[in-house]
Image 1 (cartoon, helix red, strand yellow):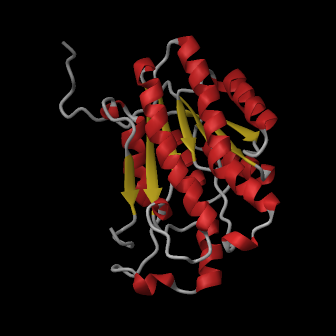
Image 2: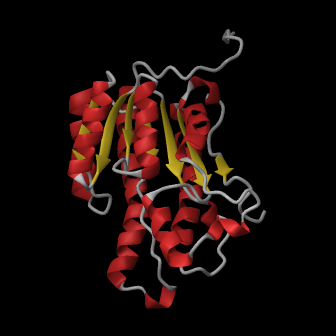
Length: 258
């Protein structure tokens, strides 16, 4: 019988290799910083290479092992090349955070086909392709893994503010989480999701510019700070969540309807 520590919780990720998408700003940058601080080797990815290099320099100054990799989630070849480079530099990826995402910020009937493709590919298709590629490698190596997919509270509530496709893709991320959790449970790969509400990020800055001060409608009259997601992220990526898979935790500070 397995003996567990008391309490059965640790944030020590030493020996783990993490890949985080969309690390050039906001939530993804914070996630990369947190995982590096907990001892993981981290592949940081995104399209803005200058920002990746700056983040890599910051993390290395703090003693982290990090590999900056250009990644376009709309491009299959870019996804495959990213995984190859990350594994060549750091080893088999055992932790994945699918964070990259873009908004539509337009009414559904006014969106161009190119924008529709970009939103689907970045928010849903790309994360699916990346998850499957990393799972294949974990299964071949007979290693356990943890995946955390970043959805949105918008997956559960859409009030017609001009982000219908964003809502649809983020709902798809929740269902992807549930389905892949079942698919890969036998291989000890846990797949979970976080659905943030309004948290400080570049995407949120754009929304505030379009819509004004949305916090007036929130019970606590505030935008969340990415640091408030640290504990949930680490719970899903740590051994403490060993029996938790296919779950989505909403972190919205009580902002939205239930």
